[in-house]
Amino acid sequence: MSPSSTTFAQLGLSAPLLRALSEKNYLHPSPIQAEAIPHLLAGRDVMGSAQTGTGKTAAFALPILQRLSENPLPRTPRSPRALILTPTRELAVQIGDNFTAYGKHLQLRHAVIYGGVGQMPQVRAAHVADIAIATPGRLLDLASQGHIRFDRVEILVLDEADRMLDMGFAPDIKRIIGKLPAQRQSLLFSATMPPSILDLAARVVQKPVRVAMTPETPTVDRIAQSVVHVEHGQKYPCLRQLLGENPKKLVLVFMRTKHGANKLARNLERDGFHAEAIHGNKSQSARQRALESFRSGHTPILVATDVAARGIDVKNISLVVNYDLPEEPEAYVHRIGRTARAGTEGRAISFCESDDRRDLQAIQRMIRKTIPVLKITAAPLEKSAAPRPATPHAPAHVPAHSPAHAAPRAAAHPPAHSHPRATAHSPAHAPAPYREHRPHHESRPRHEPRPRHESTARYESAARHEHAPRTEHAPRSDYAPRPAGTHAPTPHGQRARPAQRSYFQRQRRGTYRSGWQP
Ligand code: AMP
Image 1 (cartoon, helix red, strand yellow):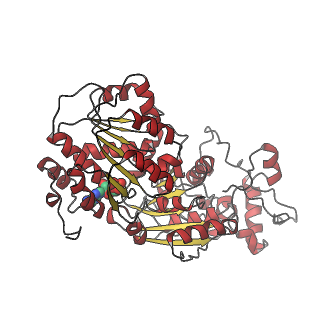
Image 2: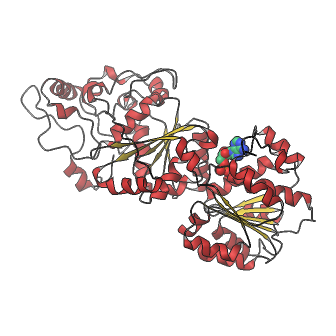
Image 3: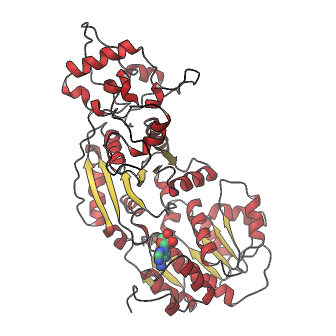
């Protein structure tokens, strides 16, 4: 029976679960669900190659809910009957949400346990939980304080086992496994199966059924991937261009560093886009808030680091941008797997500077295909202050340099094109209409250039239009040093004052960071 023609009822799931599934509008099991659920209902151990995006969570959550509810036992405080270990807080929360949805017609309770937040709510939830979904560190912490015990665990799931080992959880996992009853059902899911995972599996699962989904391949095949070869300093203008071309869309942008993610989100906000950063340094509640805001479309651009990547289960992400290529090729698949979720289509565009060629080759070797090259011509400077659309997602076609995401702010503030400086002088990424029209009593954020006298700006704008060499108009990064001698002369033959602090000034102030952009 092909998975697409299989129904959940044919897998042997109980009526309360079928009801919950039909309420979620899940019509057919995904391949991994069709393959794993019957074995799990029969009590077999399972070892699966599967990543998020394949429907793996339901593949283990549904049988767990069914097996526990069919064999009801009086609840023992602080003693869950099923334990799910997962690498990140986001994944733990996401798995918890899945249990809530699938188990809504059952009486089972679960606790989601992860670090970085106060422990009391989790302690209370663990007291009455049938199912614990946890990151290893906080779980051991609670166990050492006597808030949770493992002696009644009947089912263990190691979710994203490779990632947990990568993150250094091996000792914690071994300690937890050492505390579990030997008689139990065990499941291990991992995207990759390196020797370290096989070692771990030898300790955890017994005579497992191998559910070898080719990991995420079907998802990756659905994603239209492309690579944009960019000059140093051109990533930001290219990103703006892409965002402008994708109004109404949820866009996820990946960067290597937390600092970079913060800075990029700030620069996008400055330029009128609604963007937020999400990474490991943010508090759990801030991460959840950012995710919710992204999911609802309120903040349609999310800038993330790899640590935050796996927990991002948002349907309808239409574009993933690898602003920085990942260092590990595996991370590429995880990142782009955030789009094309649950059978939808998606696009992934990666920026590649000449220094990144090796990383690109490693990725192409891993996915066994050459990623097609896409050419982006970033918006020319002088058009950057074109009027912005009046409503957030109204226009069918938005010029690349007048991003639709920017509209709410633009509506709140008069457009910048009436201002001489904003019309011709601002770099492509800095139209900042709100900046020009901010009331005087509002203070100027540190990252914004000091406003200049209008007449100076007019000279500069005239100079740029009439005398400046073509290269002058190339959009450039805020932090890329301007080539020497490129400040155009004013009509009086004098050099115009640069719009922003020079590279050297910024270096003295410590605000110039080499190798980072924008
Ligand atoms: P997962 O791989 O568990 O992270 O699931 C990926 C996404 O697919 C989640 O948003 C699930 O809600 C969704 N999903 C899981 N199973 C199904 C199904 N059988 N039909 C439709 N969507 C599903």
